[in-house]
Image 1 (cartoon, helix red, strand yellow):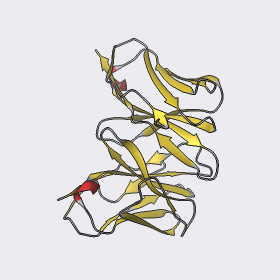
Image 2 (tube, chains in turn orange, green; image 1 turned 120 degrees about the horizontal axis):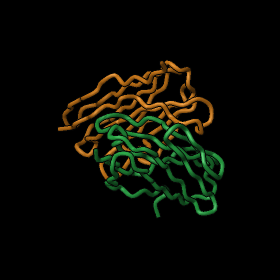
Image 3 (cartoon, one colour; image 1 turned 180 degrees about the vertical axis):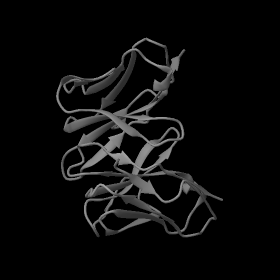
Image 4 (tube, chains in turn cyan, orange; image 1 turned 135 degrees about the vertical axis):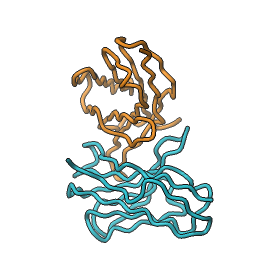
Length: 113
Length: 112
């Protein structure tokens, strides 16, 4: 069974901390994405990557950065966590063009206090 | 105008009835359309996708697409309590910035 694995299910971090969210997929997918999901706002794209060492900003990149050193791994970095970054973070991947649907990871519920 | 619009619900239907979930989109260049199901506390899972005008059926699920009206819908026949979830509509836009845009989702409640 294909998988997208997010390293943590729940995280609690302090304001100002640097936070790393890890995502690994075992499907040899080229395309990987980071979304955050908030009530009433739906899924919003933070960053995405179509290849190793390649990254593109999504709709809400401010306060975030990403790293993709290997094809299977896509990391989201919160440079200095703030309370408004408390959210559910979802990683997704897909093969080829983005018209085959995503496989999502199980999500990381991040709380910044 | 939002790119992908859905009524947040909740939509309540009795067990065994047909649930009809609707979605409109703003970009006429949209090429592919997806329905995801998301149970509470879980991540979304793909249940249907459709590219061409008309209907596409998969078991109890039927996706309907009308590009002229910029409208996509999901019908769930013989609704079961296990279908209670939030259903997300997603649209793929072609072009220089390829991305999938999601609606906020419609919460479906199937009443036993």
